Image 1: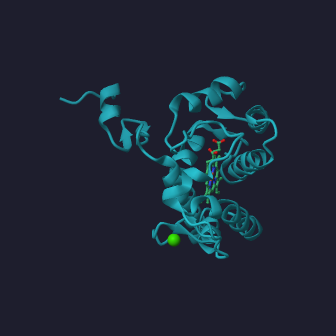
Image 2: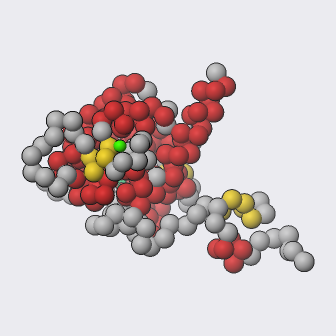
Image 3: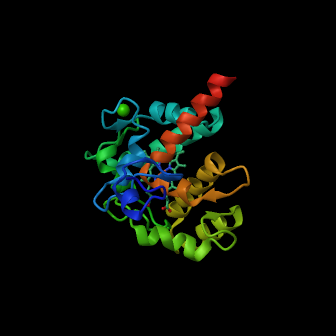
Length: 209
Ligand code: HEM
Ligand SMILES: [Ca+2]
């Protein structure tokens, strides 16, 4: 006999999909290298290396305009190529090596990625405890700006720019119709599932027009 309302065990055991009316997202596991997944979305041919044209193309696929996609390809690949490559000599094709993406971490961030690129759930919750003043599960643009400001570390120009750009681009691409950045959206950016969802949504819109 099946009961109509799902128990927490049903939800825990379910991988992804729906239990009753509750949508279940695959939980992020402690040992998962989610930062590699975040970056890996942009490795279109899955060969472990992200070239600027892949960053550009992947940005277009998630609904980013020509200008932002071009700027992102230049900014991201130029700033991360050197630190993620094992050899000292720079490559002027600016490839990013996905397996070394943890070396691209910078300061003035939220701390949700640990030094290996794993998801730190307590730091993720802290974002909302500290900054979600209006709604418990979402950030307004002002609250997001407050968070970016709080994360700033002294004398960290590069990290501050990186943090600012990451969060503002996320807001631009993934805010909801009320101008809110939902908690699930933010969780999805950390493990890269948001990029897949945006791609699906954008493909649907493109096919309709
Ligand atoms: C639309 C594209 C992208 C958006 C919206 C985005 C957004 C974000 C956000 C919000 C964070 C979290 C920052 C924090 O915890 O404070 C982050 C972290 C990071 N992203 Fe992205 N990202 C994008 C594309 C990329 C690409 C293409 C790469 C590299 C291939 C990349 C590499 C990183 C790295 C290395 C971090 C870790 C920063 C740190 O914790 O210090 N991102 N990104
Ligand atoms: Ca590639």
